[in-house]
Image 1: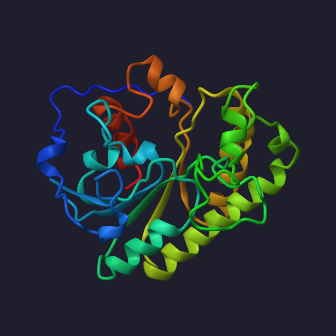
Image 2: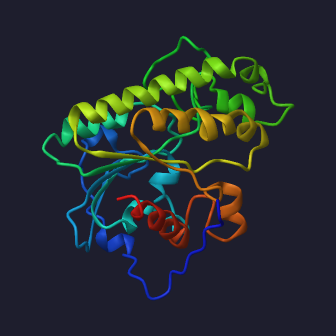
Image 3: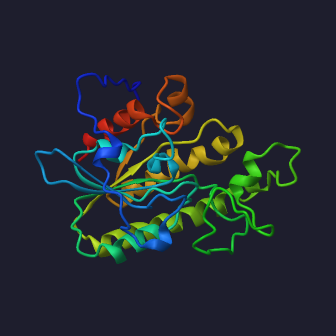
Length: 262
């Protein structure tokens, strides 16, 4: 695929502090780091778009001044339920539909998190354990085993021996999310977005087939639009000054590509 270029001059990009309606949209229990999990943005649009954006920190992207969520550049009314460190799980989709049962979505954009963000234990399906890192002493994620230094006590290459099983577990979670979305919004258009972590070599090697083959095949079989741009990865974004967690220019680059499929 061709390199993606972006020109942000003379284009409307909302100021995040003025367009966000910061409120207790999903309930007090979901406030994390004093920031509500769900943020709403309303932008000018010639069509009535109502878009739910979900994923990990690459979707969340409002931790500091150098980050900017692509959701805030999309046209229409967007809900951003991206969560820092999140893996593939249905927890925040379920909470959104419970708290916002009357929202009539036109699109769901799902930036599918890395499949390594799951428990090392293949029999562990706890909704709070699909994360990049877990702080409890007796729990470890695949991400933790592959991202730490080789001398670290958590370091292990065992995930490569069970990669097929971890892929299946990840795809089972993807399928749960898709069925949940379609149960609540039968006519919604689902768009999967690949934004891949390529700066950690073992994480990249573990995950690359998942994004390029496994997830792609699933989308073809289930009538899901899949945005797979070779440049949508952390290494390329950092090199071209778009931010590892996208900055304002990076957010616009991603949003412009998503707009092609709305």
